[in-house]
Each structure stands twice: as structure tokens, then as C-alpha cells.
Length: 190
Ligand code: GRF
Image 1 (tube, rainbow, N blue to C red):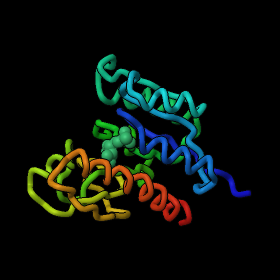
Image 2 (image 1 turned 30 degrees about the vertical axis):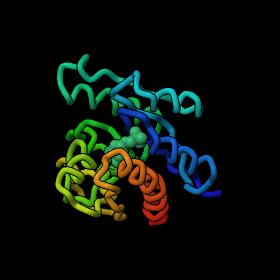
Image 3 (image 1 turned 90 degrees about the vertical axis):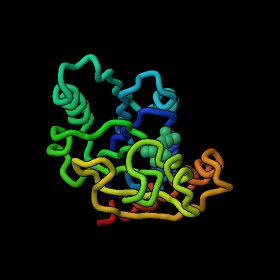
Image 4 (image 1 turned 60 degrees about the horizontal axis):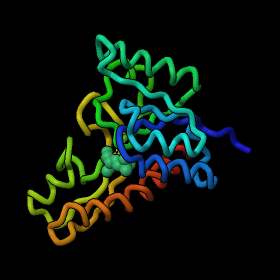
């Protein structure tokens, strides 16, 4: 059997994408394993999900570090100890800095709830509804130093439902879970 790729998921919130990735690994739909959850919000629900799934958690409070670089060096140490090869951002509410970018060139992937380059940054679904667009969507992309700016790997459109953020968010999350897994299947084949 081919060796499984070791991935870390970075998340700050509920972790529904974490759960989808974890389930895909467990089901053998991805020839990968989640070696580590990295979170900058130790009390976030994603931490509980990881513990329930038996996945090691590296939880940090970035405020406790003097600089962003010191924080990322601590994260890097945890990643190296866990022999992580790929970083998957899934609702990680922080820009990746030079320390992690240099350590994982072209090996960091993010999922964002809009059709980039439209609506980057926070509250992308709210931004789309406020703009009155009828179609938004999901983007999976490689991470660079910008905010939601790296090369696009995959996109899928999702209709805005009744101009309603919550209904649209539900539809978007469903699409995210499938698209993240399918994109990783493609990336890992290469
Ligand atoms: C997702 O919409 C993702 O695209 C965005 O943050 C949200 C995280 O949701 N970057 P969850 O924590 O995976 O449920």
C-alpha cells in the first residue's frame, strides 16, 4: 500500500471541514492521514472534534508570543515533530507568515467561501449577499503571502439562496466538504 501523506489541518472555529477531511482519510478516499490539528483557538469546537477522532492537537495562544515569527516557529516545531508534509487551512483566521511559507513552499492549501478573487477576507458569504450577487461559491487555492490570493486549484459555484446569509452558508459548507476532498485527491495524485 502506498505510504500515506501526512497532513496538518489548521482551524480556528467549528471545524466542519476538518471533520470532512478526517472522514475522507478514515474512509480511504484520500491516501493521507491527518497527523495534527493546529489551532490558534484552544477553546474552538474543532479541538473537541479532533480529540474525539483521536487526532493530536497542537493548540496555541498567539498573543502569548512576542512576535508572529516566534508563534510560527513554535507551530513549525510541532509540525516537524509530527512529520507533516502538507498544511490544509480550514477556517484558520490568520494570515500565514514567511516562516511557515518558507518551510512549506507550494504545500499550503486554503478553502475560501467565495469565487475568488471576489470577496476575499472575512465574512465572504455576507459580502456576497450584501453585494446582491446571485451566484457565489467555493475556491480551493494554494496559499501565498496575500489574503486569499494564491493560485486557484478548484472552484465550484453555489447559488445565493433568497438573499439569505444563513441559507447560503449551509449550501456553501456542503459544497466545501466535497470540493476540498476532491481537490486533494487530484493534488496528491501529482
Ligand atoms: C469555511 O467556510 C471556510 O471556507 C472558511 O471558514 C469556514 C470554516 O468552517 N475559510 P468550518 O470551521 O470548517 O466549519
